[in-house]
Length: 362
Image (cartoon, rainbow, N blue to C red; front, side):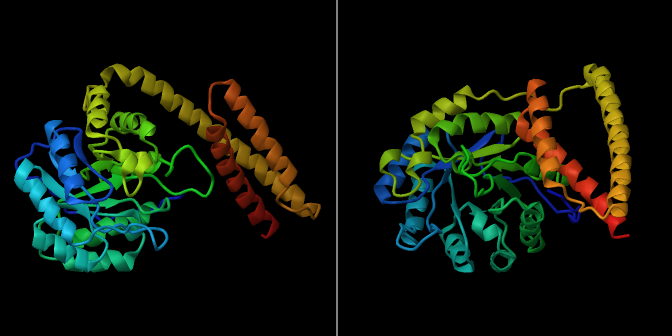
């Protein structure tokens, strides 16, 4: 995915949640949906007993098709207030409209998050930003449904321009038409690029929506920690198998506690002096790669000239497939994944075609 660096500098402040020191990883947990007062309170009590400090629950549930459970609505906000009162946990929920924002602010909800479908709609994002103007509340913005970094950053910018500075991003993966092991494909390179562009922005991983299966929560959480993510937002239910929405991706508070205790949190900001020699070798490899790519493109230029002189089409599909399959097999023999090698050669082929097209049409 080509990324244009158009990011404006965000004015950010620490999330600054009251009564909490946000050590890495900070964890937000609770059911996908607030279903009943009993279910909400039972889950909250069990999570509080495990040391969770921020409770999440969906009050309004945007669903793909009508007729599904779409949340209990405003009455659920009273249950969140009860959670805060009884357990001392902060409470968080999703907002998708200005009305949701007003109701949450009236109820004193501590943290708001914006879902993937809403992030993908600039009109909805601006409506929410306008409703939040003049308010100081932490807002967490999920990535859009499709892998569009600019859309994600644009959503954050809209909220920031409304005066809100306590922001964070939630990475929940991206939709894919192809069937994959994940419900939403991680595409880790996109949040990595987000961190490069906005270094001070906290990034939280949502392994529940990313995996779509409870057995994937642990490995995805560990991957997020290995990549330096700041926190996790995990769906946890007192009786997951009976959940009214997304039952397969929720875990009990006891299982969540087990997962969190197994996480390896590696040290950040370690000295890298001992890596200097290895990094020199990487630089040398990169320089050689650039030289070889330049040589390959010079050959592509000559091929383009030949095709023009002999009135040949630029794209030779059989040859392209041969290159992709052969190089993927070679890469796999050398310990690389076929998908990785194919991605590289697809980009190389795209540039080769561009060069040849400029010659043929020149």
